[in-house]
Length: 449
Image (cartoon, rainbow, N blue to C red; front, side, top):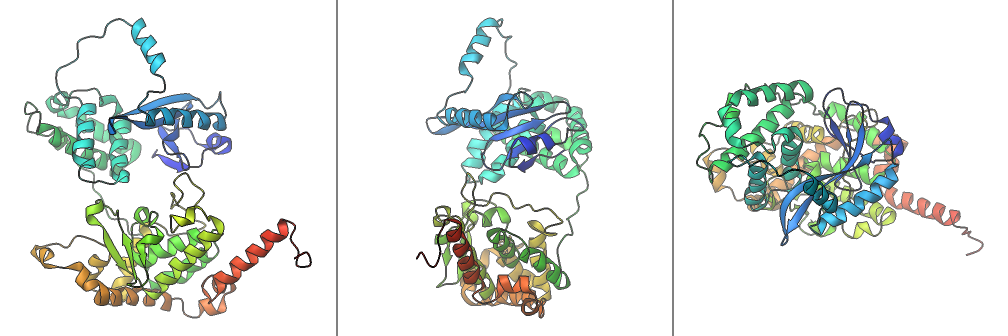
């Protein structure tokens, strides 16, 4: 079963289903690094963090907190905060226990010569990924592959895998059965990259990468996008959502085609209303791939609504983030919705954007530029994107937004729930009513005023 993200409390932990095979992690949405490991019979609280030396990552460690049957989630969370604080200071939370255990044990056997997967991963992470500005999300994805899927191989010399590629092929088959074809292929791509990087400084490693022994699973692009005919039902679902900030987040994902993880981290300073652009500083590929999204009229209105609701609901966090939330990060960290609440979200909306762009008459070339996709062929080097941004790409963006809203027909005018969301001054009226209700709860009355 794949790892999940939920708000950990006694109720949600108790409801977690036992793993059918192996283990999976339920990561807390509020406290980064805090999670519960769910096996076939046990649920165990733990934390994961990076030990640092001289301000640089030295190693990633996992520390067990306790059995979920023996301690409350609140107690585990408090311990997790204490452990994570120590880790951030470069201290192992259980350093004394480990020292006592080492003293009691017999001297360890001589280590096997050759770089291990753990050492190769740490060098690849620091010398390649961090140095090249890969995002934390990308690094976390690779770390999950290495430290969860390949945890039994962490202290295995890479030369052993190279000399016996059959075990790599067998591992790929096992992952496919337990976690699915996509995770199996993805984890093997990670292993392949780490091995190739290790060979640069370990010339004794065989040139033939052991991952070459596997038979790759067939992968198909998920066809989950919407066309114009599907938009009215989707808009009605979004309009019915209780959280207005999440509502605007999903709408902006659809209108922009932006990756949700990058959109979650935009700040007010990234919005330039004079130029009508939204700057995305850390998209997939890191800071070097930073780009500006031209804004249509509908996108500007959505951002304004998000900022106004943010200032009312989360005044402190809204100073920093466009989509603020009551989370440890201060902004939205989870895009997922129950499908019965919202049928399409996340990358479904990116596919919808690309599909509707074609309906709007936007060319494949312009759609790639708007979504910050790489341009294939030799022509890519001759394109100056920002020269097209001010007029041409903005007109294409407006055409896409107009096509989406045109598909709604008279729904906005004739439906109360859509009027309460998209009608002029609707946001002002909603916030005014909510503010009055809040004052009445605190004992304020018009007569007393």
